[in-house]
Image 1 (cartoon, rainbow, N blue to C red):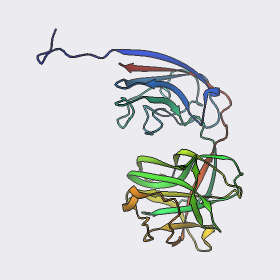
Image 2: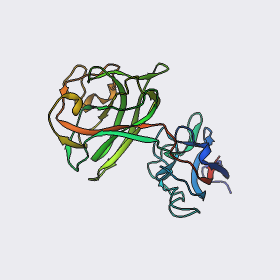
Image 3: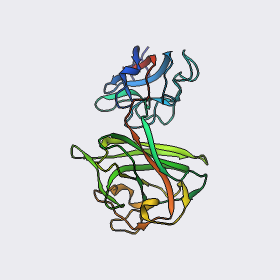
Amino acid sequence: MPFAGGNRNVASTQLTKVSVTFSDIVGGDIALYNLEEDQALVNVYADVTTVFDGTATAVTIGDPADLDGWQQSADWTAGTGLTGATRGAYVSTFKGMRSTSGTIVISAYNVDLGTAVEAGATADANASITYLTYKQITGLTSGDTIKSVTGDIYNTTATSFKGGVYDDNSNQPGTLLTNGGNDCVGELTNQTISNTYTTMSIPLDYTATVPANGIVWVAIVPNTNNSNYRVTAEGGSSYAHSVYATGSVPSGLFSNYANMLYSTANISGDGTNNVRFGVMIDTATVTQGAADIYLEVAK
């Protein structure tokens, strides 16, 4: 029967099954489905048939470029079957549900996070940080691949963070690392953490290679002034704690977020807040696991 305003098209849905194993992991993710323009992913179900191991404890299915997935923090190491832990559920902030231009690759991401190498504060103490902060990470293996940077956050509301990797210049951050002419930076958007010490991971748009000296500096900047980081207040030489950028030229303040990060580190001075930052090295930690993924797509 026609609608009062005339006929209109009604989309049909199609259920697609994709069987995957741990051997399908590439860069920590498993590509599942190419969501074409004007298609919408309306539901996802994950049936774990063989338990995964390693770091597959917080798997998300969606668009890795947006980092807001349909199925969030599903623990694929907990057990087999289509359970509450693996069943798709509506996520109001899901950004990649409908493709409006081009093709979106729907993936299971954060399946294999790699190996974390962190430095800095470990105690449960925090402080407000509203500016670009750098932390030196040492003891890395030359030639290893860095796929994300991490930072410990205690509290923040609706905040986006940019992260990047710099080389070392005499125990100071130097030049932003690049990959094929592309900056090794990434962004994590719209994060809310409520009074819980949480290790936030910012995937890099282009992976970074550890320099010959095995030293890098992780840089993280928020776009709001409401973030508290895990810190230890201390003194000493700059490489023992964080270096910061506030009133430097160009500015490292949160209000200048849109213009960061810079190809050469902008430094105001040596910080007294020893933050906890780190890198995720692209090493395989998942050695078993299989799942059937059911994707319901409206066309």
